[in-house]
Image (cartoon, rainbow, N blue to C red; front, side):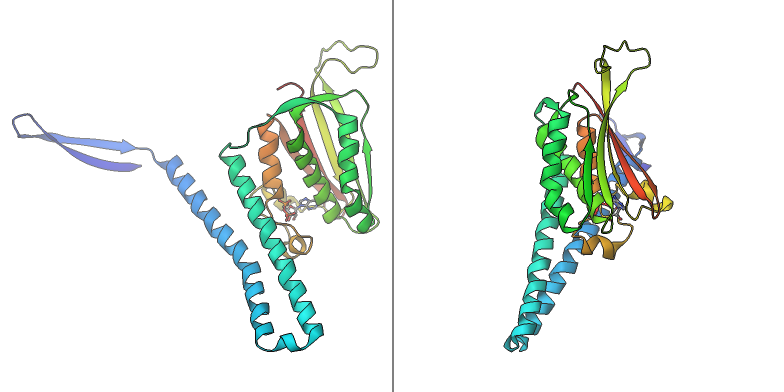
Length: 272
Ligand code: ADP
């Protein structure tokens, strides 16, 4: 509570008493605290790659540049760290745009089997590189009203995580299912009358410890910092995904078993 005392002066300039103003500032304070925590996190995250870039550039300038092999490996590090900075800044800007609702969504009907097929194709190079099988199970004729680019961003992010946190030889899969209301009247193929759809993205990867599950959608939260870094993660992906799902009036949940794998489930209303 914020407490303010305001003296009351009457028309004839006499002291008329004191007005006590109590204001509940819990919400404001909480927002302020969250904002300054975010700024601290961002600064810390930016500092790590910048320190590396600066350090390796200094070493090169100090003479390492004369040894071609060392020079090449240091330049590669500088390149990779700049790339990382770029991704980080891109994600921070994206998140801030989404959070301040400066992303106008353009909804259109999307046929999910062809949409999922195309999205999977975009991820195939990465999957092949890591020797991970990716597959989809979507019956044709299922529709959802969504912003196509944003929906692709959501799916690619989750598939990308699936690939990143699964070791060679594992698999990542995506499935879409209509959710029928309890007393819906189904037509022959059972496709009509679904008001929600569920998208499941599963992997046979490392899984997420139970204690971390409630926190993985938080900004910059990672179970294993080193692992996230080496896979090129910024720690903002799931936070962006969650916001985008919510902009579609949907929900996202996760189930995971350590050493067995994870499944992310998105539920979206069919009509916006
Ligand atoms: P990052 O850029 O680190 O991947 P995300 O926001 O996408 O950030 O994910 C947050 C953290 O959640 C990751 O660092 C990782 O620890 C964990 N995580 C996300 N997806 C998976 C997955 N499919 N399997 C295991 N852990 C995951």
